Image 1 (cartoon, helix red, strand yellow):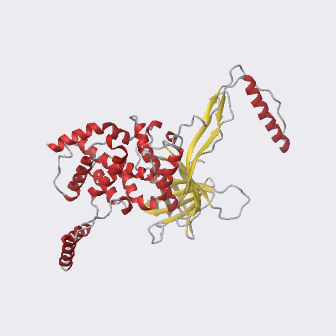
Image 2 (cartoon, rainbow, N blue to C red):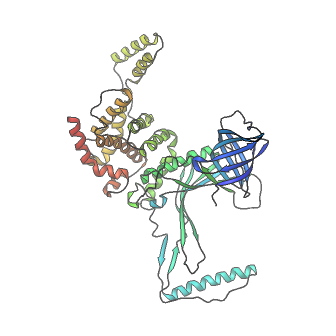
Image 3 (cartoon, rainbow, N blue to C red):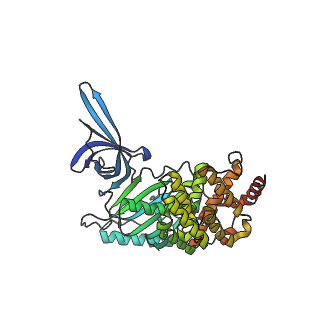
Length: 503
């Protein structure tokens, strides 16, 4: 499917039609509308605009917002230009709208998806002897003759050219690499091959591994993107790098009865989808945490659990993704701690029971402050009183760290030390409390605190879902994954932090 960049077209909004210029350029995408006056837009935050492009395809510009309005003077006349920014662009055989559940499946390809796989059994170069190649070519020729006879086509003679050392390029025909069923739908990785017919310049088989979600019921564009982000975050964690969406394809529900057997498809352009990705990432196959070929059952189990737990863990995982791929900063340490604050009760230590005397004191304090005039100080005190007996940030982090210590405690001595120091660091930047050391002057130790929180959060999450962390540790080799670097440098960093804190 071709890309759609700069196009003229006829667009319509409700019952009005207008001529526009559509520029599809990621975050710089824009729709320009021209007329004798500024376009009278409905009083809604987001608009859906449909248009027929000059190549005959249908474009649905979803969730458009007003970007700018300009007036151009030409002697005594004026032309008015209204600019709209579309959040999502769907180009294909059918128009769709933001609230319309018509998407049956989504497939997409991203930067390092091939690093998840080995592929040595799927794609190979063979060197059979000349007689074997002749037998294969004869069989293929007979099949082509049968097809030609059925369709009344002319037949071609069998005139193979076979040297002493022929070579064959081989694709196993395995389209579905792995699949699992989740509450969101069927999740799969598939091969999508293409090849040329051969020429003096050679022949080859190209492949794009695609990730797919087949929904049990047709979905809206926003529901699809929620599922896509959930799946994409799993791949990013396993690869250890943010990943650029290369293309996204939708399978649509047919709006009218048709003799065409294949369902209509469309290309989705997510204008802000790659905004947080910078540069090109290099990922080796040895770096991944989970691979569908190396450990297929484990991969399917963890992926299914990840998709099924998106509702309860979506917010803290989204916070993790935002922090994990950012630069080391105050925002990152605060965000890394915030992941644990957002954990649901099922993933945090149980509430502590307070004794009767403390419970009675809490009741009296609440009564005293409840009758005072409303103020920020009053609300702060009531908030603190409400948290007494509940797990603190430190409790939550240590509770999640215990899951790692139970599996591989010997690899992480004194793990509670960076955990506790990370809480003190976060409190310093959020509440202004006293710092243990100068975080800007001791940047290596500061980064170690950030890495510790992110490592504990993600690894404990994967362990809960069924990841064999012990097995990964035992196979451990220094790689490009951030968790690999954390483990390799842990002994050195814990000594530096301990000595710094002692000062």
